[in-house]
Length: 88
Image (cartoon, rainbow, N blue to C red; front, side, top):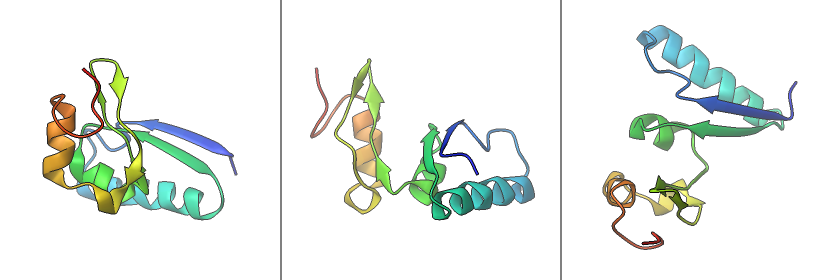
């Protein structure tokens, strides 16, 4: 089992069955002790797979917060460079 998995847009372009499989494999790897970094602009994917979420805008990264401290709206605002924790 790898200790680190970096997945960029891991389910982009996949059918619904493949999406569920890939997501379950990433979750299983995490549960087995791997660190999993998911880079995605798919908010559903981020909210499903993320334990902690940070948003990048214009080369600046927000503070990573637990997924429960984000909403779709606050993530969207941070993606646009607006809101708490976003650098100018």
